[in-house]
Image 1: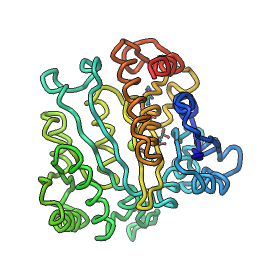
Image 2: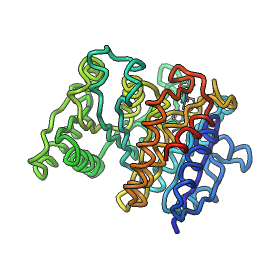
Image 3: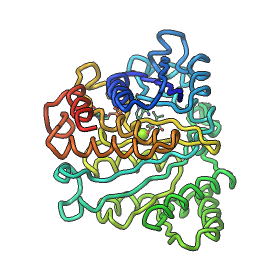
Length: 347
Ligand SMILES: NC(=O)c1ccc[n+]([C@@H]2O[C@H](COP(=O)([O-])OP(=O)(O)OC[C@H]3O[C@@H](n4cnc5c(N)ncnc54)[C@H](O)[C@@H]3O)[C@@H](O)[C@H]2O)c1
Ligand SMILES: CC(C)[C@H](C(=O)O)[C@@H](O)C(=O)O
Ligand SMILES: [Mg+2]
């Protein structure tokens, strides 16, 4: 029996993970679920966004299904106590450094893509985002400059081991797809990126079958809109990957459709939609649960080694959407629950 930790979090997190759990339960796979609070919900209940009990459940579990964290009520809290610290803490504590964010247009959603119609169908890419380093985890704080000005700072840093291991994830992913890896950096300006580029080139020696290219992040953002079909796998740092993946979601149609897996070297995995807690629609039953449901499929594929079950979920989501099931973000009026029902009906 496999233990799945369900960490619903805030806002629409519980709404979308609820549907993802229903889908997992329907597959009859001998899974056991344990739930724990995280983010603002955990701060409210236990005074900390990532309480020790929640972290220890995540450690014990075979995989973690995560909703979203973030609550405007806590926006003025100290950084260390903000709900968002919970997801950063989980990524760091469980050494989840490799965040996989696939983006493709689902059949029937081509019209929703922010791209020109002639290129909308071409987007089918995987962003491999590093999630243990970069400005997210460098030294940070506020201080007063000699001129008496308040100053905030966040150190951007990557060491060669961190870059080499995410590069390898990118090369391996490209090898299993169309054989093209684009490393996205800002090597014309940043020391971090120059090291990044050197280390990626060194790693390429082990992957002669993969075609490696390099692109500055500003150009990459533009190229993704101009000609998305040129990208197969993108490997990039924490901050650039965060931004590019939200952009990729709208190229594909909606942020409500993009799942993710965040993996460690020892096979641990946390699975979550790329979107946040969406306070503007929370509690209304209007959120699209597809990203969470597709994250559950990634959980089956990567952590539980159940590719057939993962395929079943993905096929069911594709069929539900192709048959016209539309939540508000997809231009329709279906509720979160109705979308979950439609997927369940097609499993
Ligand atoms: N991994 C995470 O837990 C995560 C990710 C991103 C943002 N956040 C947090 O979430 C909070 C809100 O952030 P934000 O508003 O910048 O981003 P967001 O992704 O929560 O929402 C952006 C927009 O997309 C819409 N949206 C998002 N998910 C949707 C879905 N499943 N169905 C339909 N519409 C959807 C929202 O309604 C909103 O208009 C913040 O506290 C932020 O820090 C958390
Ligand atoms: C909530 C925030 C810390 C998080 C990130 O920046 O990694 C989110 O935007 C994401 O994409 O998972
Ligand atoms: Mg993000």
